[in-house]
Length: 281
View 1 (tube, rainbow, N blue to C red):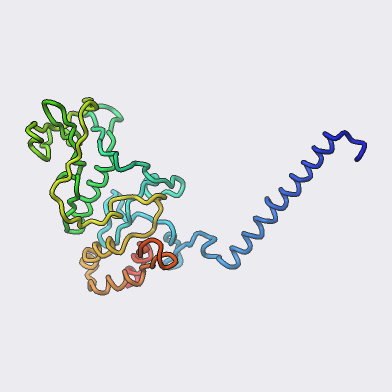
View 2: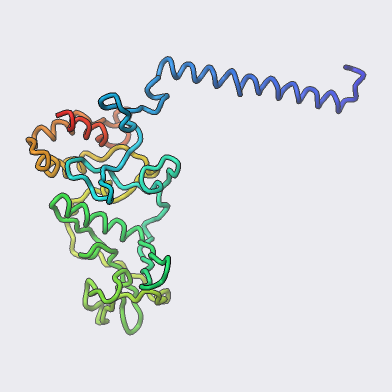
């Protein structure tokens, strides 16, 4: 070995190191960690699968939608928060919308244009969701910076006019005038980039629909909702199931987890586990 050129010895040493580390980290370590996980944390290691009547019905750590084939909420169940992961809670597309608070301008769909569905801003998504939740739960879905028809209350202001850019013509703008300027409806396909963007807060002083009912989580897979959102849905679920409201609220408390380590985050309700508990009732 000593008679081999130095560069050969270096390559042989490198090859031995790769072989040893491959066996150690690529074979032994995964087998040990997998064995420990299966022995001590079998349920968690296998996805925290929840079963009912011997059948897998979901995961305790992955959210899911409780909607019918047309995407409408099933009124007898508590609803999850929105999800931006694929078509909703798609583990292969886990992601947030990546839209920020300055995303307030819609791209209006052009009538008759193929494959042109436009694009809703984050603000309009929040407004539309809040309106829908309000209608479902029988409360006001009004929010600041939202119009009554569930889009972002945003104007583009020019020297001689103002345009409610998220309300397509022939719709009626949410306000008739702004600082002496007549407000027009938005015309699909028209470029309003030169105008000044002015969000209008409106007169809403009380918001009844919680934030997690109208915004997606960072992962898009959150299985929990806030206690406030669960309490908002409780009367509807109790009515649809012809169940005592006090019993439904008791189940909410039973399936509420506290803050992590006692101080991080907020108490939350696992939607799947709560709905399964309702079915058992």
